[in-house]
Image (tube, rainbow, N blue to C red; front, side, top):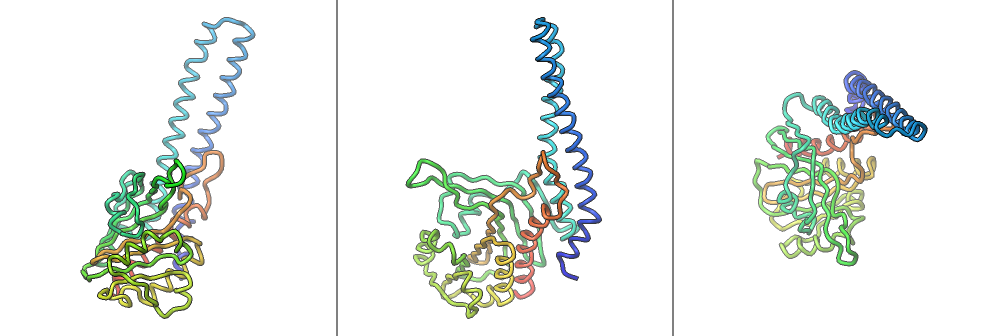
Length: 302
């Protein structure tokens, strides 16, 4: 059975009931909030009518405190929503191999060490840290957002926003290999100059479909075709076509870094709209499944 079909069945049996429970909570919070605001407006209008400020104040204070409490509960709902859903997704992928922490992140040093984006990353933040092991390969990943100061305008420009992964290989090969999206070559000139200064040169992989989507730079001593097998090439091409997201990969002295772009905040819940949606969780699942499938491929062949 197709893995996505299996996930849909798991969604129907496990994730969907949890989303329904959270949906009832969301609706209750909004219902009480709207009623409280309506009553508060009524008290304010009453003040204009009876013109007794002290009496109105006595009526407003407890209601205002209750509204503040409701806003706190809404904020707590937003914070709690994502971990609940992510933990269920991770339980589907692996029951005991993964550790998740919504507040932790990979470090800015990990981001710089990838050598993919030539940036000092003056603005760096992250969340949703996942650590685990697939086969013999240990990995860490998190969502990160990196910005740097524009040289033209007085503002911060995006360097990268999405899911970033770091993995350690037991096979400590030497050299470096970079896989970058062909479409964004003009925005990667600083990175490419950095690669070439370190001895990496553009190479061809023999697959027209892959080379139409990606460019590859490698040093002479790196095992290119062992690291970037035809299976991995096909995984990357298929995912890019299906999800319309860009993928960046680097291999450096036995470590692998993968960056998958994500323009929006994945699994951030709505407050005024329903969150009971398969598509809401499918995108996050497929992003994570891509990263894990690449790691599995390397674990099986290396």
